[in-house]
Image (cartoon, rainbow, N blue to C red; front, side, top):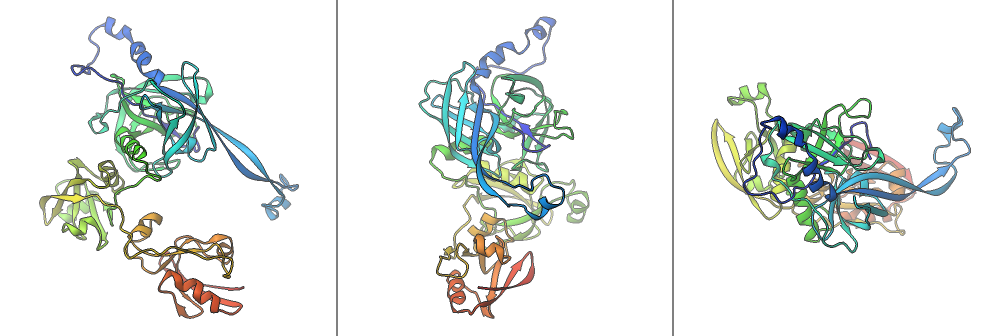
Length: 462
C-alpha cells in the first residue's frame, strides 16, 4: 500500500538463467506474438500478496468534527486500540521462505499473513527491517521448497531494458505490467520512508504493488518496487525500485542474525559537483562528490582524504551525489574494502578504503534517568561517531546528547539531538553529570542546550 502521493515500485528476484541466454529485440511477428506469458508463468509464483496488521492507539473525542472545539481538545478522550491493516506485495528469495518487502508494508506490523499464487498461506515474522531504506526481510513459518527468484546484478542494468512489474495493486489480485528501465541512479528522490538510490521504470505501478518484483526478460530480480511519482495517486509512468544489490546485502545481514541493518560509516560530509563547481575545481565535466567536512576517525581520513578532495568513483562505479556514494559503500558491506577514485589538484588516484561501522569511541555511556530524578525517562549519551551517525548530526558535534527526551523532558522543551551544555550554570561534560546536577538542583532549573547551531535556554520548575 502506498503511504504517500509518491508511492510504490517493486523489484523481483531472477530465476536461474541459462548461461547462453541473450537479450535481443524481437526479429519477427512470430517472436512478438509470443509475449511474456512463459516468463510470467516462471516468475509469478515467487511474488506473494502480503496482509499486515498492527494495533494503534486512538482517542475518541466528543468534540471530533467540531470546527471550533476540536482544535482545543486534541488528545482528549479515552484511548482505544484500533487495528490498522495494510496490503502489499513481496518476493520469495529462497526455497526456505526468505521474503523481501517494503518497510512501509510490514515494518511495524504485529501480524503478517503471506498468500501465494496457489492460495497457500503462511504466517511470517520480520527478521530485519530498515525504515530509511524502506526494506524488510521476512521469514515464513514452516516453509520449504518454495518457488523463488534469483537476484540480478543491478549495476549491470541498462536504460531501455524491458521489465515486468508484478504485484497486487488495489488488492484486485496478482497483476503484471510491462515497461522499460527509464533511468538509473535516481538519488534525488525521497519517497515514503526511503531515502537514497533507485532504478526508474515506466512499467505501471499502483497502490498494492509496494514490495513487488521488477524483473528482466530472463526472470531475474532487478529491484523491489517502492514508490511512484504522481500528482493524482495513480501511475503516471514514473516509478522507482530499490536495486537488487541492496536487497542482497539485506538478505546477507538477515541470515547473519543482525538485529538492525548496518551501514558503513563514511565519517564525512560532501556535496554533488555541478557545472559551476566543476569549473572552479578544474574538472573537465561535472560529476563526483566534493568533501566539505571529514571526521578525524573517518576511514577516508585514515587513507589520506581531506577537505577539498573530489570522489568520482566507488568500487569502479561513478558517484554523483552523497546518496549514491553511500549506496556504493552499503552494498560493499562492513568489513569489506573498496577502491575509491580521488581527484586532487587535477590528479586522479585510486585508493583502497576499509568499510567500517561508526566507532563508539570515546564510549557513549548512554544513561537513562530513573524515577528518582526530576526528568525520568530522559536518555543522554556522549557525542561520538556512533551517536552522530545514529541521529544524523554534524560531524563536529561534541558534548552530551539527548537521545530520548522522555515524557517529562519533552514537556520542558528538550528534543532528540539536543546537546546539554549546562544545568544551573554547571557545565555538563559526561552523561553521568546530568542526573548528578539535577539531583543537587532546587525546584528551579535553568538548562542551556545547543540545537541546530543555536544556544537555547530552558527554564522550568520541578
